Length: 213
Ligand code: TYD
Image 1 (cartoon, rainbow, N blue to C red):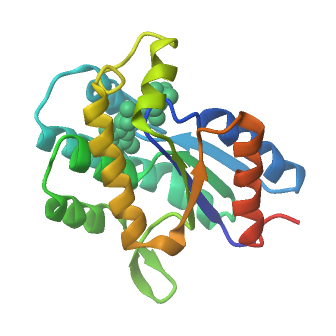
Image 2 (image 1 turned 60 degrees about the horizontal axis):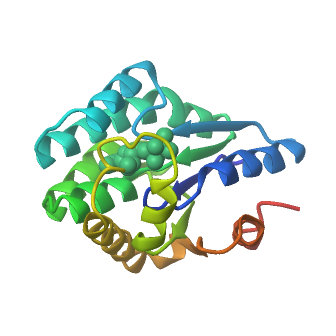
């Protein structure tokens, strides 16, 4: 069976986590081996970089270089081998988050991000090299004002979660640009709904691809 790479995206507070667990269960029930992972992170080295990115103050370029360094290790150690084994890889955030947070939120140069994306995600395929991208990206779309309300009643915020609503408006715009650049890769989910309604949209998006019976 061919490997499947599905990423989950959205601003902080959009509520993607529970759906990642639930989708993993559905694939497992259908006999698929599932690798659940996250970015930044997913390997011992990338998790160390995650701690720096989420807690330390740094300029936007440093941040971008660290998330791409983490991504390179994650792809080589975890994602590519799992896909080669034919597994389903469910990844909590991937490169769209870099374009949204470092590009949109922090205003870092999109051309440089595009260059780094191509360098870091180039991989060997049967017909030569190609740039690895998720087969499907579920974008949990939520107004930044609603996300802020949800976050206010949640845990102690990390560096990004502590940002003002205006930052998340820029992050959302960053996500939207990515969707517009490659619409067929994305499913847009209305994340302001009740959890069950959002889950129904998750299932529908994956079923539409023909990946669930
Ligand atoms: P998140 O995925 O929301 O995890 P948790 O639910 O444990 O808080 O946190 C990751 C944070 O990292 C999130 O605020 C977005 C940010 N991020 C970037 O800024 N750039 C990236 O490339 C990635 C993958 C994440």
